[in-house]
Image 1 (spheres, helix red, strand yellow):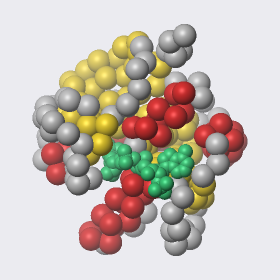
Image 2: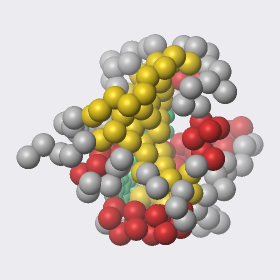
Image 3: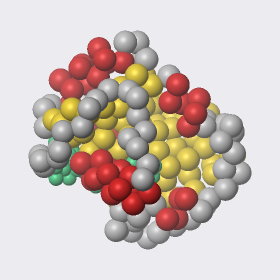
Amino acid sequence: MKTVFYSATTLDGYIADENDSLDWLFVQDQDEGGPLNYGDFIKDVGAICMGATTYQWILDHNARTGEAWAYEQPSWVFTHREFAPQEGVTFTADDVKDVHAEMATAAGGKDVWVVGGGDLAGQFADAGLLDELILYIAPVTLGAGRPLFPRRRDLVLLELAQNKAFACARYSVGPARA
Ligand SMILES: NC(=O)c1ccc[n+]([C@@H]2O[C@H](COP(=O)([O-])OP(=O)(O)OC[C@H]3O[C@@H](n4cnc5c(N)ncnc54)[C@H](OP(=O)(O)O)[C@@H]3O)[C@@H](O)[C@H]2O)c1
């Protein structure tokens, strides 16, 4: 079982622009069966979590497009806000260590996916609970936006490949500097 932050990012380290838009991402060309692809990744995921802004983005997106909640896995949303109850989703402001233990149990040996944002992934890393980053790096810079991983950490590059427009990289998260 691994805990993984799997995300797309701009080359300059933003996962969304300042208005939480992903329009820079959806125009990029990719092969859905290519290296480190989402379909293969999600098959091994048994529980997911995200921050409130990401959850709100999904709610807004689904309201606009008519799409349904995409995740079969039990999901946790870190928030202090009041959201309408949703089946399969637990809203929490508990310590990431406690929530991670719940997620690991629910995942039943499969992986835990930290969807984002970057600071939430950083909180898992701070607690020593983040194993890997898998990044789809889009050939675009934004200059500002929601940060990918606002921490100072050393990573180890485990895998590197091209998927059409994207540089795809898998890193292990080393221990925090003393
Ligand atoms: N490029 C990609 O693949 C990708 C992936 C994921 C997300 N995104 C996008 O990137 C943006 C991410 O936004 P973001 O960086 O602001 O982060 P976020 O993690 O989605 O949301 C941040 C919010 O989560 C809540 N939160 C975080 N840690 C918490 C904790 N320990 N306990 C309780 N609540 C906690 C807080 O909300 P409260 O206000 O409730 O306190 C905080 O303001 C979104 O637009 C999302 O759609 C892109």
